[in-house]
Image 1 (cartoon, rainbow, N blue to C red):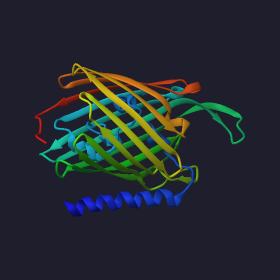
Image 2: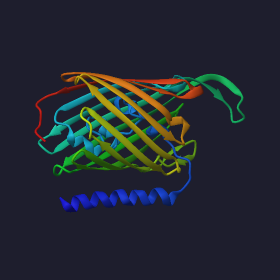
Image 3: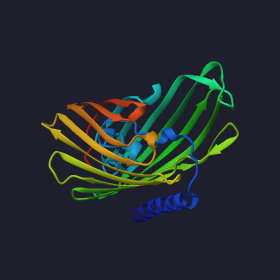
Amino acid sequence: MKKTYLLFICLILISNKQIFAKGVGTTGCSFLKIDTVARPVGMGGAFSGISDDVNAIRYNPAGLSQINKAEVTLTHNEWIQDIKNEFVGYAQPVGKDWTLGLTLNYLYTTGLIKRDINGNTLDGTFGANDGMSTLSFSKRFNDNIHLGTNMKIVREVIEERNDIAYAVDFGLLYKISDLNIGVVAQNIGSKIELYQESFSLPLSLRIGLGIKYIKNAIIGIDAAKSIDNQNDFRIGGEYLLFDILALRAGYKFNQDENTGKGIHGGAGVKYKNYQADFAFVPYGDLGNTYRISLTFRFGHSQTK
């Protein structure tokens, strides 16, 4: 166990070195930076130190091994400029300590106006889409240490041009009483090439806290650094009323205007094994965005 734990720490630190060695640059597949699912988004995306449901796949795969039942989540995201985003996630505990996960993430738009290199309008329109498939593994080593990894296939399509890249994430979740510490390196992988230009994936290192000192409440704090020198700081929380209604709010301090910054808000309703969540994020002049998620839990509960 100690050897595996040290290996994950080394992988995360190596990823951190790569981030700062490469410095400023332009990255591709920017949709990988977009927060998709309603519950974490309502908390400002401050979720890497919490990651206590199927959404851990997106934020910190180590947290997957906290769940004790199979979970399925479906999300629709009405994003800016008529761009839409669909997300499906599935997590399955295997025995006491292992959890497997799978997600499909698809972002798309149509009706884009064709223009030449000088910006002149051409006849016809075109569409663009991005997609990602993720296979996840998470293991609980003891009451304190959880480790996880994602293996990802990323595809980007603009009109008739497309390319595929491959990436991995590595995550650690360390639990101390009512405090969780999460560390995750994301999007370590190959470049993607379109129109004879190649772009690195948005490699990043994220550190987060999950604080559960108050009954029925949880606070998340995240800080991140990415390969293109975009700093990211998030804080948010969730309060559960009567074990049914969840109220969420968060704030995102972010240099990247395209991924949303400022106030986030959301709410959720949970009844037995069913959960519905909603999140709202304003994007200033670009308009408002909305996420709706439905989550189902089923099967036998695993003792953790």
